[in-house]
Length: 332
Image (cartoon, rainbow, N blue to C red; front, side, top):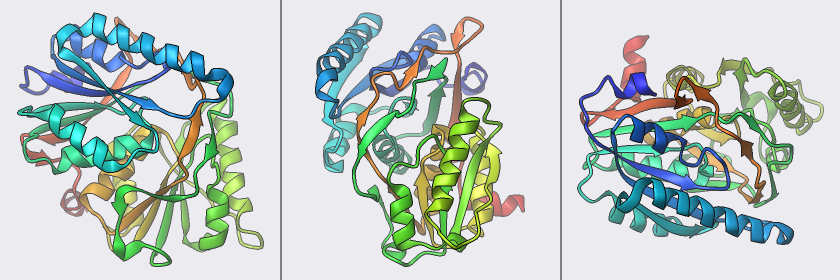
């Protein structure tokens, strides 16, 4: 993260982050502050539906994290609350009020549910006021025990990611990011798709215990297609967003194939899918949104020297989009 940010002549970055129960909530903010690059901090508290026995802990944890943000970042810090299943328009309004005359934004996707960070990324990409946009992902020490989430909503498209040309049965490819849990998605697949139309992106190298969890995910997907050949995954680097984006372009034949995305893999992999959907189109993004997340979704923050370990990905620089179909066509 330090190397990426030191490459550009930007004095101040305003940050959008998710206030969650995870210890890495302010990992990226802390790094920016140490580098003396941090401007305003917009923290979003997402009020999910914790289990009754965990409601008090959930509420206390969010309050504590908010107090930490206020103490660390002072008058530059603000927070807002959203229901997990809130409408996209509510987030749009908050975004407009927060951005103001900002030109440089960092979006910390580490703790955001995909429903939120996909929409925020799209708003920032499409916003002509924003000249510089970096997405960041901080690394926890480890993830909690399964299940990390539960009580899935029916599978549907994420807000603002439903292309009319690829709705219903109009698709050529289903591209699934392999993660820890397929949730209710296999049932959706068996009812709507054929194995021959499906590609799996497997984060590699996974390492234990991710290895076992990822292969159980793949088994669950293959079990959805009885009497059809098993789907062999395509291995991609778990955190190399440019490489994953390039692989997506190859699989979609540079945007020619109408694609359903299913972002169940690591956040950087999901980010690559999001960037493709925002800049290339001809796709829809499907997801089974959980209503309950584990209070110990992840534990700790991995360190690198005196900084929190975090990855930074340029999305816009000087008003120019980094991830475009033209970029990939010119490579080939």
